[in-house]
Length: 75
Image (cartoon, rainbow, N blue to C red; front, top):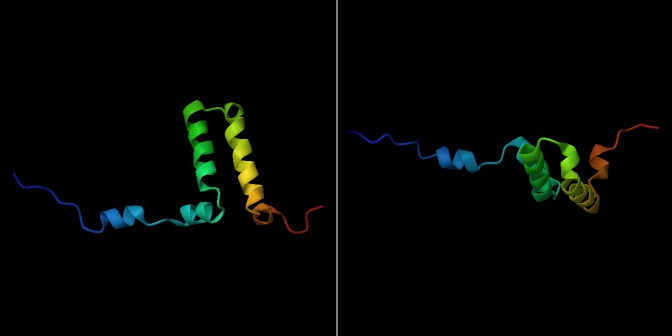
């Protein structure tokens, strides 16, 4: 029986960051975002993830990301 081999570049492609990952890592809050999403995935209820959401919010502010999400001209 012959062994099926995967192309050599498969692992490299998996390790390369996509645009979403690049945006998340650029915020400085990738770990907090992952924990928040994992919490929701496990519990299926955002109300049960308040601690994780608050940690993400604090990180977001600490890293100066409010400017990323402000609406121009909003009153």
